[in-house]
Image (cartoon, rainbow, N blue to C red):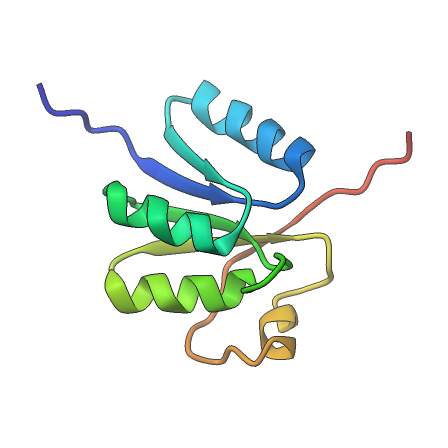
Length: 112
């Protein structure tokens, strides 16, 4: 039996954010594959059929914009959603990525 679940590759180096987003997305019926860095995300991408990349922009090593660019070169139909604690989609321009118009979801910052 073939699954029609949307598969999401979720990349964030903050374990709390990664866990929260994973639970929220899987709780809504999505198949979620997680990674805490771009290198591991590239490996996981090669092992699965991924429909959507959800990635933090600020990652150690290779940033989320560079990761998205590389994955889009492998799979042009891939959808990409960036999450960031930084302000606005201009963050990708800061990282020197100009090849696509990013979708951006801002991380909320809560005082504890």
